[in-house]
Length: 231
Image 1 (tube, rainbow, N blue to C red):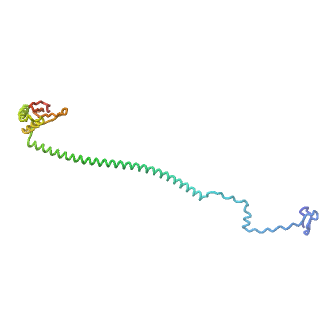
Image 2: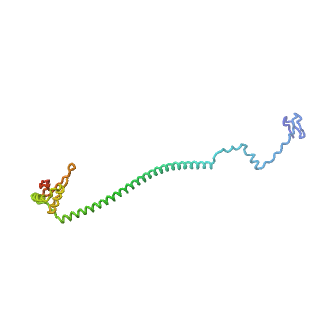
Image 3: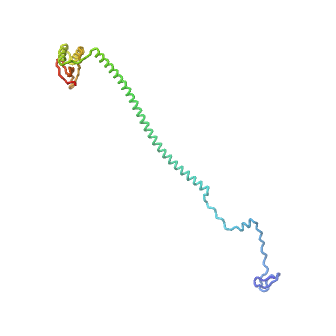
């Protein structure tokens, strides 16, 4: 038994319309729905919301690469700064080395000059020592041949001098006469020293002799004067 969907009146299966209200009683058959496969069922069950698009991020590899680049740039900058600093130090050290090299060359030249002077002075010293030795030997030989002594008293000096001036040549100059008296004293075994002193570019000879503990100044006229006393 069937009923009208509109008024509820009883209808037969062969009725196309309701006899009470005229409502169609037969509905067109529903279209067949194909059976979905398991994959299609999973897709049908999945939500229809579209997945959000991926953002343009760097990703893990990009981040690692960025870190490597930053570190490389940091090390590169530090290396560049260190290189410039080392380059400045190298320039300073090079300039200092050149200055020291120049000073070394100057000092080497001075050492060479001083060494030459030392050799010259050493040679001169050797010659002077040789001359001194020769003169010392001559004095020793002369003393051995003519042993000299001082006068015992003032009277002995005066007597010898008065006798010696009689042997002088009056035409000789004063220096020659004084040297002659010195040679006469040496011949007689006495020590008589000749001294030359200067006054306003004029030179004057004097004789010195020792009698007792007094040094006398002697002159070619036979006069003597005490000069100073020996201790």
